[in-house]
Image (cartoon, rainbow, N blue to C red; front, top):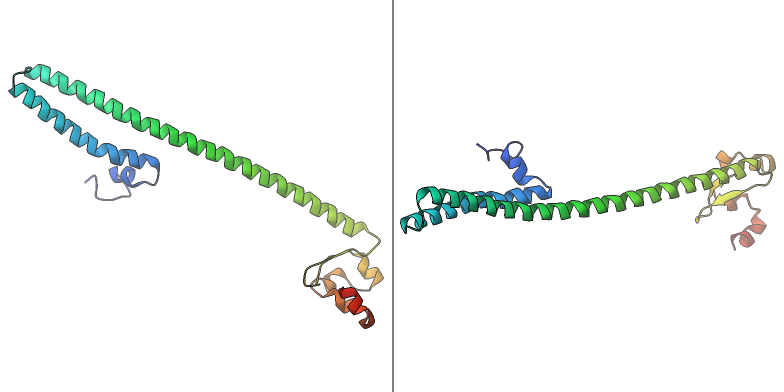
Length: 171
């Protein structure tokens, strides 16, 4: 009944994707094997007359407590180390995220400044991509050239150059 489905019950803990499932997966056989072995040793000790039933039960109980305390302690050390490593990674990722946000804010400020320059300049200022097409252009182009910026965006700048000046302009 405990192992019927992996969505609920004990199996959720055994198959989860976190480090704790490894601990449960390794502890589960110990929970079965260690008491069986200790019980067998207890019976052998009683049969050989090393101790009576009450002493054997006390030794069995004490041995189980000591062994499981050591096993759980070792696993907790591993879990704590794993958690410390994860916390360190989270701190580092948060630092990177903050640095990215800072760069993004700076870039946005630069873009805002560039847009302000384009909007307030009395000269024609334009950004042309590697294909020679207008990417951004100041509003002044409408007064000087008679074209709205929206009409020029995406067009090749060479189309506005007089045919006699095109070779010189391309260089």
